[in-house]
Length: 97
Image (cartoon, rainbow, N blue to C red; front, side, top):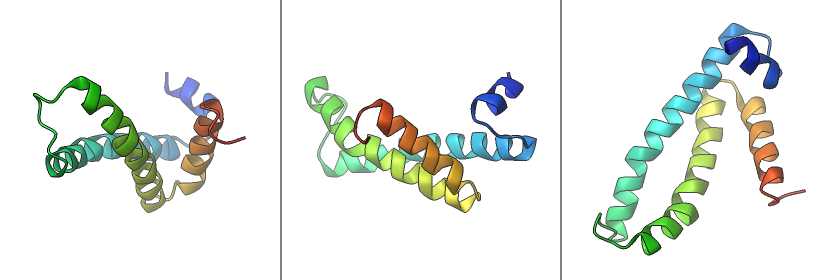
């Protein structure tokens, strides 16, 4: 499985793979902690309709995750990988060309 990821992401080093996986896990965990205070500030509680929660999540939390991914990636010396990863994702979403 790891060899397949290394080939897909065009990386050669096991250390780089570990760092990339670490960045993904730290960012994912961090955004879970960040979402709660943001939603608390906005007055969003679990009883709030999903019709309100989901769009707010997409508008606020999704971009925050992308930025945090670049920040944490930079801290771990993997900015180039995550910058290319972000650009590829945004192209697939047709946000950029």
